[in-house]
Image (tube, rainbow, N blue to C red; front, top):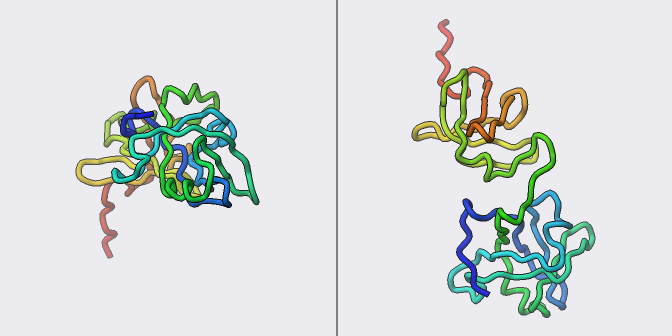
Length: 187
């Protein structure tokens, strides 16, 4: 089944295939979703991001089974029944249509694609635009494009008190020096 090349505007990355697991077509996953059981339910389909030379290029794939093995997420796909076939999918990135996401019912939680492109506002003035969201172990970072540079803003309520999706903006209250160079203290 053919599918369009994934685009960050149309689709959301939800996982990456790490390696084949066992002899029956199982694959270990790296998850980019906080609800893997719902996202990888049997019958769910994904667009694959693979090199152009791969026979999986521009194809979709459907989940047959998802389970946990030794605390690792493992997935089986329809038509992938042995280790050799599974090996052809290693390093593939799995994308899902944004239309399939459904509403986010958790307060103060947003999908990356909802934040990207919003104006970054400080003291009522637009200082830049959200370029991307980086997810780190300690906290998420908003990457704000300011002219020809990028500023990393910790995505915490003390610095990002308001996300206004309808208004197309994120209000920032950053500490001094985050967006401007501080003058050296005179000695």
